[in-house]
Image (cartoon, rainbow, N blue to C red; front, side, top):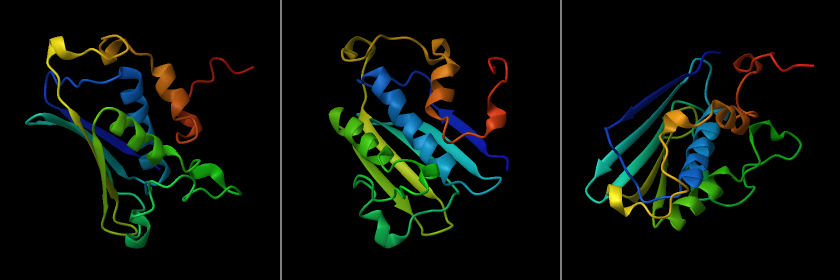
Length: 168
């Protein structure tokens, strides 16, 4: 089962946001997509500036969401089966919405139904370089450690994604 992840962004996209929270938002969306992707599926992540906003999009060709379930995706634990929690805790999208709203943003989820994938759009306000005042430090993503990403996606990624370097 090979999953492909594609990323597309304009250069120099700045948002007035807490970096750690935005990283968590994107990791939650990626985790959801990975947990619900079909074998050999594709995930597309993109950043798009539009007027005064930036749209963070995560699209996949995974299981999709039934029309009657779309209205409940932001309710805590609604998608969590405690006997089989391999697909998450049911809090990921609730957290995503909370982070977006904290930043004056919004979340839109679209699905054409079961087996047809899901598209999530998070809209947050743009910022200019001098306007970034609530971030937890301005550091390029390249300086971030892959360890955090791999740790956050532990329940979603296959064992082959991890090195056996530290195995005892």
